[in-house]
Length: 82
Image 1 (cartoon, rainbow, N blue to C red):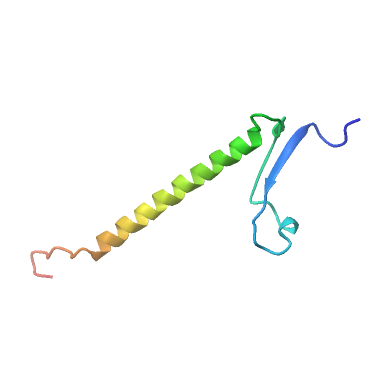
Image 2 (image 1 turned 180 degrees about the vertical axis):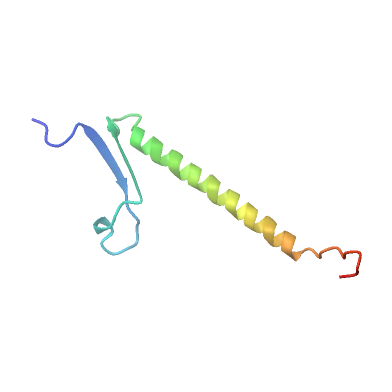
């Protein structure tokens, strides 16, 4: 006899905080056989989500550095000398 739903649930909580499981998960995945070995689809989806967030963070950091560099470059003088 099975108790609960047929889907597997995988949740990730923020670590190094008191009572982490009392807060909402930072990421979750639910699916049929999502925790079934050997592929464990839930873990694969989590890895993809982490990789995507790292790409987005790196892109934002590059944009921030580019803006900072542009602000540091002297602006060319206009015709009226300002």
